[in-house]
Image (cartoon, rainbow, N blue to C red; front, side, top):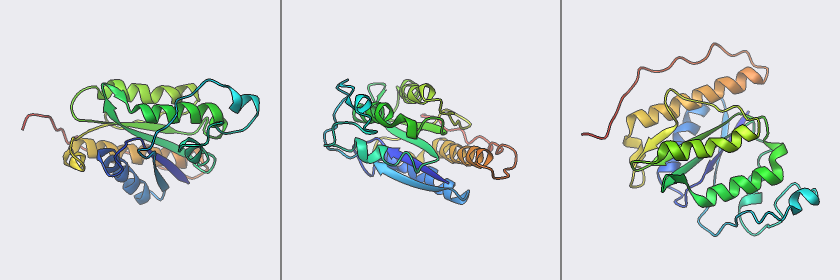
Length: 207
């Protein structure tokens, strides 16, 4: 089984990458393969509502000059999806939203019904709003949303700083274990009961 992880940050090695790497590390411990795909920092088109992907039965976006189709091509071979994004003005990265909207509309049949989760990476505020925005497409695509023992949020500003957020990293680890459990339970493997939450490693901004 394989989980596709999308790094929706323009910074390839930023805190979104740190969070996704922790998830991938834990998935590996659970015997689940993963692939992290970066959306890059080149221009990405928004959906032009041309309808050509549906009208022509293309199974991809008609615009093929950015990363969108390269990502949606991976949907079919993935058993689950995790999308991570930095928080900008209380919202996910706009380029990532463009990719998700176009990919889901043009190739949604390849990902519909598969478990999914989102991760919001934040300096301080706006994370819950961005987190909810990321989850909404999953619900329209009948994708079971995988949770953790807190909202899937991790904090950090400079690259790699998210690794210092103990509670955030714990949240990523629990998310991965829950994802692995759901995949095993729904793909014919005999899985034990739902993973037990770790003792809460609470962390706040006041140091």
